[in-house]
Image 1: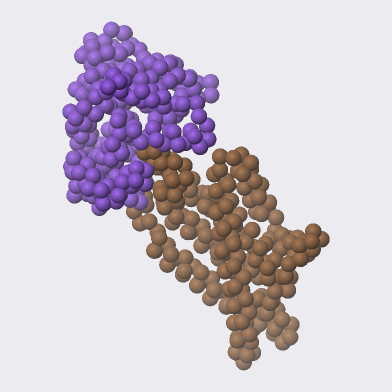
Image 2 (image 1 turned 90 degrees about the vertical axis):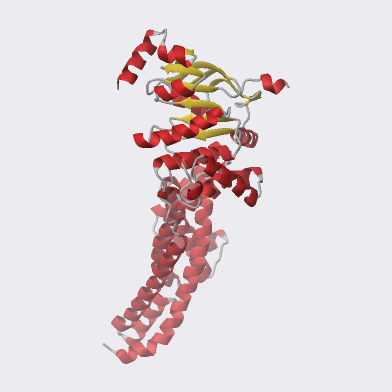
Length: 220
Length: 255
């Protein structure tokens, strides 16, 4: 193993990792917004909104992420939508991961005992208040867990933007691999960076779980 | 005062079906202010559904529900219905078989959240009132306990106090002691008797004939979605006229 090469490329790889982190962060925030809207639509009284959420989620989960990325980035200009690669990646991953997160949110909300809704409604709370004061606080730990799982998947999925020319960890690793003919070292460094970032994400989620995990939140 | 002459709860021809299965086949009932009505009957007779229809957790398909002169099941839709029904429900306290306390809130918070969020009572004021109610059900020392730390009997007493915190005009009890261990039943019954003594209007769905005999002013025996027999407890529970009531009571008192 060529340690000198590893040391030489690490600063450049760190820079590429920063690109991955930016992509990840923007996408996760966008994904959370998309997921919240989809979850809200999924519980709406309007059949149209519920149908929209269902169809949207099935499309996002039923087609490969890479194809979605290509459709947006290469197919977009045909419809007059020309995006730079970074923006296309953020939008595509955000729209995609939002669908996955919303499935977790929906499950977490449905896992709260129906008796809780009945008790709140019987006191005179409205639908939205019941959700806000009683259902969401109890669903929060499960929602957080689902967001955590999806965040880790997202972090690794960002590698796909290398296919449209964003120089993040995977693309940088490939370039060094091609330039040096030593793909093991070059892509190995990329892998180690991914692993470190994954630990950061799972650690952050664990921290949040301890902070917001409702310890007493077992059905009474 | 005209409102004094209104019955507290008035049901006219309540019908409810789930698909083709008719659960309530036309129930009439008058509950005067301060009276206690017990509803007894075999499982599946529709007694719980009747109680759930009164506060529209199970909206009836036909009939009228009146609360203190106000039509409960008004033919409204959308936001107007929501506003109306939320206001009406605040006047009816409901106690569930499974307690349904809010597990993420302390006993005290279970009591205060309704008055604070729905009635605009200040948190300080709500707390004072809630502590009074917790003391009344004998749980002042459990104010800061989460439901998971309470026994079944304690949970149900908190649930009763939570309903009372909204200062309801009528209390609906749906098999309040059915999920409790036998030795915990008495502490809940005691609280209900105390309410009875304070002239709270109550509708009680129960399997406990002795308790019904003790507290009720009026007893309804239901079967197959119909009222088979009704009257004062000494008649319905001690000297029932209908053969069906007699056989039900024989089985129930024997077991």
